[in-house]
Length: 354
Ligand code: GLA
Image (cartoon, rainbow, N blue to C red; front, side, top):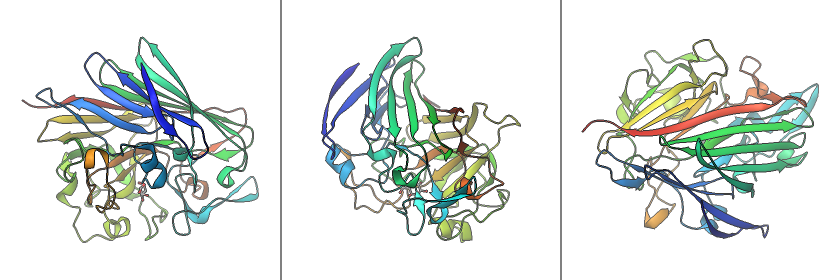
């Protein structure tokens, strides 16, 4: 595996880039700053390789301002209302970095820390084990959390994420990956033509600050029904309270696990019709945040001079549901000492049509 320097983090730690490849020519470049996937080159139906994720060329750009491009998100992906929760009778206050709410781990989440990286090669493929020990009290969270995330590029064009964590005090944990995809390649146009299918009968309705309203909602008859292949843009302009609250799609879908919580199941199928590129998402998680790149507005200049305009990328963040520490009806995100947090997600790439 090739390793090269990616510069120095604000704390002075050296940061590297690791290039994962497989025999089919797929290539993922990953840095141990924030576990960020810098680029992901996959073939189209004519065998042409393009980079299908958004991001920057230089470390300084990620440090200056990034909407979580490619990043590993934690200690809690998504929002916690007002940055507050009660655990074992005690109230905790987290950093608030999204209006009054806590988002994606706070001011300095796992996307902005330097992970220890150990490259490996085995019969599954080639990958990196990323380790980070989050101190007790970091961003307000209780307990020392030891997180270990393994990225593997397999021979059959899948990128696999295995998450593991342990703690010395009870804490919420919800790790995810925040890559922005544009399967047309190189982030050159909007993602509205991508045809998606989601294995979700219900979604989490949100208020105007993106906090869950409470009861889950059936997708039937709403613009959130993607149970049959539908273009992302087909209904995104509809006059719908939920689309208004999210400024488009920025919602958690509740995945149909077929009665088997924790089983690896197909969550999403995405087809980009002009190139034939297909991405499947499989996960053990109960939910997936579907974000249609609503906050991209052309101000961020990306790789090779690309300008990321409105909805030029989308994210499918597999995770537990938002604000779970304050939502007793949602699957629990609580990790206690002696327990192991385990989660697996994979993105598999292929092509469709001739
Ligand atoms: C998540 C959030 C969005 C936004 C993006 C990054 O998807 O739900 O509201 O913060 O991350 O900009």
